[in-house]
Image (cartoon, rainbow, N blue to C red; front, side):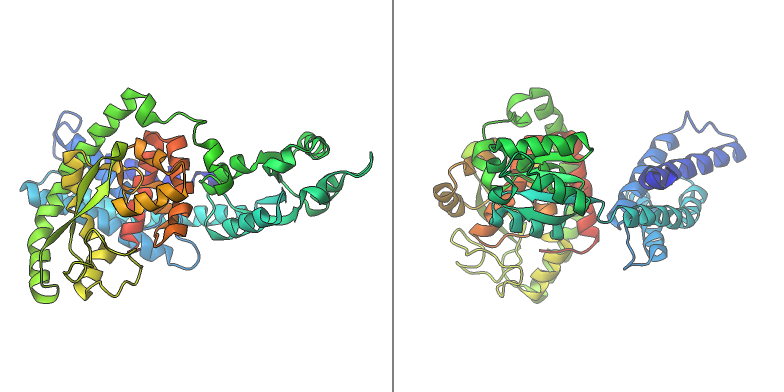
Length: 442
């Protein structure tokens, strides 16, 4: 049981170490810890340590990376961050014994929880064995999806067409027999399979035997974090969108946007002179560029970025081609800005202005929106919510360079619209932070 608690133990260790060392220091120096401002700053330090640990991959480092190195980086990162904050404020917000002592003690703790988490991942690998009934192309697509980056580990053990699965005689139970032979744990039925009473009857038999039964939509949502292409149009009207239907969520999210925007303005101001210097040396031209994008309710706005391409009418203007991951227009210094994600920093101004939210579908250029509207009738549903600096499609799919990628991303965006909430928003922010610290540039 304890092996399933790797992540909670990670955070409990952070809280316990900071509180213990803070209390010991308060007793040793005869002051009230709970009545001082150090309690609030201790909580802030805990949050920095937790975010940094998650960002470097703990407790999910895996076997290809060193848990000790990740632990040192996570602990040192938290110490450095609070030290920078103290230097910026000009005051010792927390005692050095607490700051550095916590960093030192947490290294072996981080290694311990990573070992626990690694054991859990090894035990979970291939946990769900999936039997699919539906069209051949749907089965192949599902197989590829599960081999990519599923939310829950699973493998497709076999796929049957509706004709193969449909019983010929009274005693024919090809789905039941195959599921038992392959030790399937999940049965996935396409829309066509659900309309066959013989297949549904076999699914009921398997369900009674402990096999989970899912529609394609349900399986994609639970195991892949997206909606299948075949279900997008049908599902487009079948769920509430919190940004439209729940005013409390809208207000809370806007408050979070403003808070993050204000905090994000600090690194923006600090980085500004360095980017200006880099531009003068290796990226001559305008410091910023403003590009039209389509926002909430289809309203256009200008998104701001540090320029990363060579200046010119076809670099990053309104008629720019789809930007490739290794686009030759990107300058060497621009590549540094992109890999470090520093080119996105000016968008804190868009967030403060209300053009962007922290989390939401990534806004596209007007000409692409026009093209995609014509090809995907339900594409405009994504414009019912405020676009985001980051989103579920970005943390799951990372990059899109053409119409096919746009359709792929739309499957993740529909999942976000269907499950939108503060919990998912915070999850996306955490994954984005991990991606940035991991150096996964676009």
